[in-house]
Image (cartoon, rainbow, N blue to C red; front, top):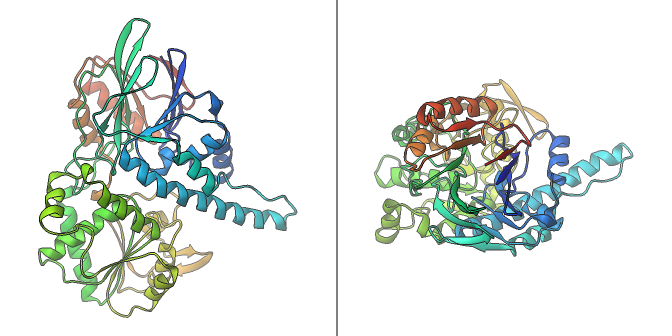
Length: 464
């Protein structure tokens, strides 16, 4: 078996790995590459293989850096099945449609700029119709149910605890008379999640391909997250200010809503108005409610015995733009949760523009902000930032709580690897910036001295 490391190799974006086994080709992930505009367009439009020659696609979860280029793959000739869990299929349905609309808007913006230079317009990477076609090729399989994908390869999904429906991909391979188990970790959750189950341990692993997003660092303790949120919100209420929370639509928004719900039920927060202002977040929350098979015991019991964990009397979900605009006129304290988490797109930019100049307000980040994004610039304590091309003075309080990260850190990844059984012969460290991947590779050499640990380079091919 040969593994081609085509994306998310010494970086965290554009996950894509091609496995050649028994004369067949399996694609693990087909994510959008996100970086400098020209490089992103080139890499996302042009695959380093012929899509029509792929025999099967296996998807670990619905984040756009893992599934976002599937519509383009199908448009360029892939006609086979795309295997994933049920929750991943439902989340991908809303995320790919949203991505297609972003592609359309981005192409329109670029075409307008090019027209001024006398250049021809650009086409979007794919359309909503392309996303719909790709979704028609999805085949959903539940956790723990082995299924054949090509001759000699059976796949089983195990819960990865990262986002709803996220999976570790176990490939049981029979090749030229030998059998072995290849584990692709997908993105690994931290465990002890408020909503999701812990990553399930996998037995009998011979080869491991593992993510390393935070392979060289340790998160803030989870136990302190609720207390810190409570203290920051109460201090803002005392100033009669508003709390603005940029939040990823899938996973993070639901976790923040659940945390605020629990604090309110415990009497640690007053029933302050809370608004989730993001159509994508609203749709994602509805998908969460549909997939209780992914919930841990605590939240499942809460849902069955008490009430909806993602809804309370003073919580309002907003889809319509007209209702969103009315939040600009709010005079009373409130909490506004809006996408995107890095403040690069969506309605959050409007809320930041309206509130970032008031020292009574709090801008609270609850996730990772990549370098050069608006969120990163605000967290960097810049005195002014540009929003919609205009400078805004940053006078609001700015805070960050990284305890809600959906990715395991160095210690949690180490615990995950210790939980695996089997004589692991090779380990491939992927999905991390180079510094993080190399650091975790060193950790793994100490944990698994009998395994050969490699940090593949982009486009490298390794024989298993």
